[in-house]
Image 1: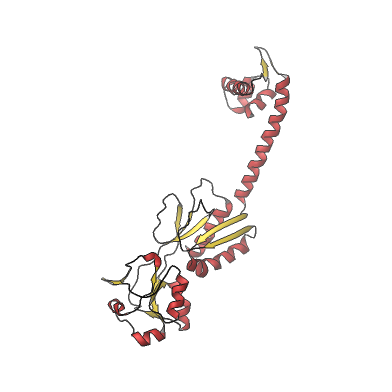
Image 2 (image 1 turned 90 degrees about the vertical axis):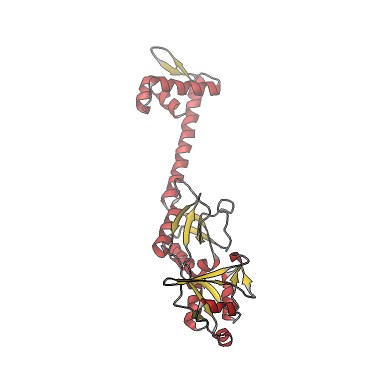
Length: 287
């Protein structure tokens, strides 16, 4: 249609080709292909001149309207890419979303008020395409290599227990002492989880045995504060309870493996402005 509109306004296919940076032969092929598709002659051509047929004149006006609509649609899409706006659906693990991401979301919402945020907190790995997720924050090793990922700050992991529990069961001086304790387990760790500690060149793997398992980190935190047993969780989950005295950090001279964290999006050649701006904002705060 674009070639036909230019050709209809020019004196010849050669003149149209100069405007379009195409050869006269290629302009003719475009016009003939359009005529074959329509089953009608659009331009009468001779060696000396060309003129629109009646069908060609009517079709020309519709082509101009159609191309104007396409251009308007492109401009709308471009404006949406240029300015952050619209709905942004974000997925994150429950504890990380509550303790780390929510303060960042509040600042982002104040900076970009045209973006409507929909935060989905879930400790399972969601299918971003199926569930309409624009951006996800994921802990641990990434399994989906089709996503575009950026690393965030790794998370420290602490072990802790309540003062009342420790008064009854004793304070472990070495990871091996955890064998005598009720260790609270996260369901995703599987049936035989291990806590891996290191100190300098020393490494120790402690089997996790206990009477309480949950698929939710907040539930494990509540159980630990309630004196059920020893918990291992990200520092951002335990920090407030340790600071208030509800929990006591255990084995502070031993380190548990840090937990990797990434912000990911689907692989799009030109992500929208809301996606780009949010990723940049999170990286500045949590990267």
